[in-house]
Image (cartoon, rainbow, N blue to C red):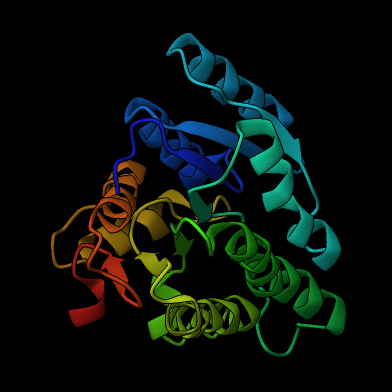
Amino acid sequence: MQLKGARALVTGAGVRIGRVIAHALLRKGADVAIHYFHSEHGARQTAVEGEAMGRKAPLLQADLSDAAEAERLAARAAEALGGLDVLVNSAAVMERRPLADIGPADWDRTLNLNLRGPFFVAKGAAALMREKGGAIVNIADLAAFERWTGYPAHVISKAGVVVMTELLARALAPAVRVNAVAPGAVLLPDDWGDEEKKRFAETTPLRRLGKPEDVAAAVLYLLENDYVTGETIVVDGGRRIR
């Protein structure tokens, strides 16, 4: 796919990895609809920076834990951009809730945003992409392949994202390609202390943490390579094989 002139929607584009992905697409010459829910300040900064590059960067607020809002989001992006070629599902939440402490509200909050939301955003995007084609990249997590007992809802939600990616790739082929990126030691949870982060880096085979730009580079590869679908690229410095 040629990204220059492409019309993209990035969810969770006001903070963390989502914001870096949006920047990467803007630098490639894409117009990018900047989705946010609470992170308006970061989203507006991203939009201003995109417009300074001469790109369209409309702001779209939506609560993606609401399935109806999630499914409508792609159409709103297409209306603002004149169509939709790319979707990157990045919005997510990661909360430490051990098995003994997790309740129905915790479960619903995580699964609704991390799994149900991306599914319905993708469903809405697919309806727009079926005729002319397009590409979807979901942001999963190394947690999809490991069993972090402190984060059961998060692990299950991200494992679901990997399976969802494969299912959508099969269902939407050949018009729409669907892939995923699973970051590992890149942006660690905000509630982790310095010692915990240091230990995480030291136990990663490459002996360092990654950068959000490493994830963005994998996203760009999956968007630009027209013969890849149904795959999840793990960007984790080798933690999965440690």
